[in-house]
Amino acid sequence: MSLDKYKQINLTFAYQMSSIIKESINIDYEYYTKGFVLEIIEKNKLLLVKFSKFTILHFYIEKEIWNKLNYETSHYMKEHECEIAIEKLYNIVDLYNPLFYKEIDVFDLLEQENQEDSEESYLNLCNSIIDILYQEIEKYMPNMVEDVFYVLFQDREFLLEFNLMLSNIISEIKYEDESEIMRKDGVLKRCSYFPKWLKEGIFFRDKGRCQKCNTNLTGTITMGTNYNWDHIVPLSLGGINDATNIQLLCEKCNKIKSDKEIYTSNKYFRFW
Ligand SMILES: [Zn+2]
Image (cartoon, rainbow, N blue to C red; front, side):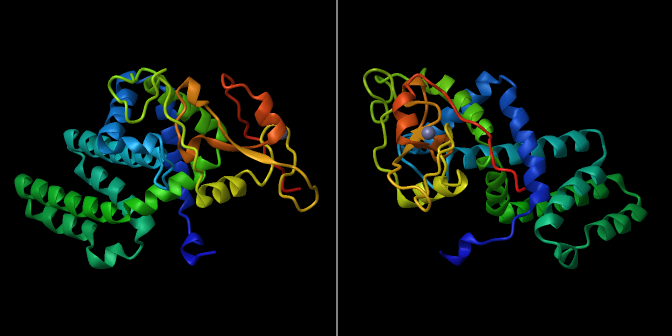
């Protein structure tokens, strides 16, 4: 196992952001989702037909983090509450770089400038502090995205909702427009190659058990149990070839599950 897989996770940020993201997909922003899918296609359409470690959900998380920060910052700036805008950004920076205050003591700077009593220079200072905080957040963005992904990837019911949201838009894509990724019948092309990292990751998350009948597929206490990598939202219903749309099923359950059935569960074993 490579060492970079073993890392510290910032659960405070991950849980906060995860719940915001879960809410974001419950609201039916069709134009928003559509814009997101079209952006992915524009950036790298092969992402929909080929498994990538940087999944569609990673893109979505990153976009949502920036959305949240931009929304909050502009909201407080409009209300002339630039200290609150700064504090909100600072709190996030502090989670990822607790020594940041040693580099720049933003609150001390604000206090000094405030005494000089010129509104314009105070506002300028606020804006430049916000810029600095944004740059700092950008540095830690890959870690932030990964932490949120860690939490959301274990929530299979969320993954089902997320992929369903995407499937509404994928189903509208026509072969004539995107022949590189679509089949003539309007279904996304199937990626027949499941990379090792993907198989290992799914097996690990699903604890080596069929997500439908709970059969132990680890091969340590039972033999002769074959397993399959199942698309949670089938390709025929607009599902995509993305790690977030894959789960572990035993061969029997996979055969029974038709290509029109959408199923997963959030069942886990109690610790005791
Ligand atoms: Zn099964």
